Image (cartoon, rainbow, N blue to C red; front, side, top):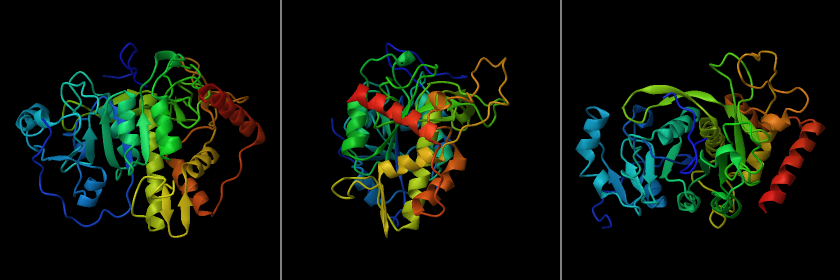
Length: 396
């Protein structure tokens, strides 16, 4: 989780535009899904975000794209930036929505408080890694990237009818109970029927009162060590909704092909957003749904609205909760400085449980009706019903 000014950082290893390019007229995109990371900026030059193909004009028009940048594809990061500075970066304003042709990135910087709009500045890097985590989980996702940490930044995505999922990885250090982006995420989810994935703190602080992960309309996500980590243990943010992969290898913000290992709920959260988007686009493809978002007027609040299949935010969230699982604590290393999964009340550590790629197909099958997943044990349900009640009381 990244902490905004006055707060601390995540764990790392390290005049209006009038000239617009001709609209794209390629074939329709087919079934698709749009994820909106909100963060420091993004390195559009990195190979991780390159796309073989184009977005159709229907998608660009639907997202109110005002400008298309044909970015350089030769030279170092610095050489490409310098080559594009006058024709692209110096022209972008806070009211622009820009597609970087040849990439999966459509971006905007509504706060207008940045040295280089949309682009991850040299001192940043967080947003590039966050977006990389989304695409690692779903390489086909359309990215609507918003630079910023304010309500305005969240609303830039919340008020886009075509956006399905918003993912945020910033908030108050230690999950101290202070106002944050909760009013804007409520609009996104309660009013506009999207999904919001919010990162819990990197400490074991309870997630309930965290303005990013705590509101009951948000999916609060903590960290869990898996994949390259030798031990299996909870890493952060107690009593969230779910836990996801804490350590990942993600793209650099200041070159075109480098990667680094980095850790935190900042990356567990977009990884989960990517997995959810993969579920959505699979269901859309299976049931002939070729639009996106859950606009209450145009789509009746359904994230999937196809032939004989309607799926809401609540449906997907319920299936996510059913699919989560509790790992064993048997491989925990007592010298690791982390906490094992408790066999007594694991819900107080990782909520409904761990979610990763293994959850995707069971969720899809469950929503389609065959086979349906088993109900969770009564003690887990009671624990998480209490979690939701506490959050409802605190945030509403």
